[in-house]
Length: 337
Ligand code: MG
Image (cartoon, rainbow, N blue to C red):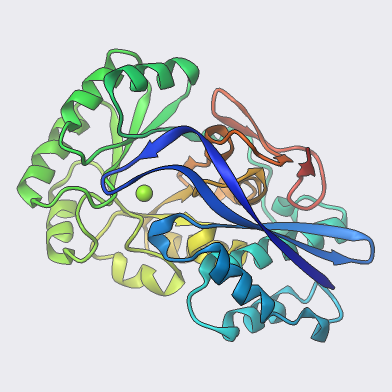
């Protein structure tokens, strides 16, 4: 097995603004694992707030020695080894997990959903993300992505009602709201959630800082719609403590260290009666298509990464008004453009 990797920068179609920062591009690292003529593709996406950089990913990957493994189908042992090299580095680990699963599917000649014993996702719709922006830009974004079943709206910059009213003037579609820890007062949060729940908002993600555990639990108890953890739940180990605080969790491959642990998180969350959203960072069609193979298991999808970038190097899943359509190819089912 030969591992190669290189840095790449994703350019956003629209500068992306949330409560605490804005950005125009996202650094990623692309990985490839080659075995017996097949290539598995992987990717580490590195939004600033998670703390990994292209340098840290490359440093981590340089420590990975796959020559000790003879068979890429030995995925569990390989990933246990990768996880033991160093703590954290979750996106770097995900890039290897994704590439290994891609190659395993290719060696078996089956798409990943079959590899995991799952059915092909058929009627699963992703949301389309609308960042915090001027009314004019928000209107433009909705026009560009009209007809979506769900939009994911970022709030928390002080003009929350104005943003929702702008969107409600354009579309009746259901909304997901993501505050990215941007509210601070629990009473304001509860008033806002009441108001949002009367405007076809399905759930609210991470309304308060993740450290405000008692306030979030209070809010979740009182709220008519589910409160979903994103920043508060990174890996499998975080789920048990989330169950008494939140109604659901947002699972992302870049947090979970990849598909193997994302699947374990889905199973654990189901056992605990938590709702499940499967999300993504700013990513190419590589990681997003990989995640889409798990989508028949979850309640909601936010897998719009490829829709928000200008320079995807892969062709993978496609979208029909937000409905996820996987190609009939082995592994992740992506091709280089
Ligand atoms: Mg979020």
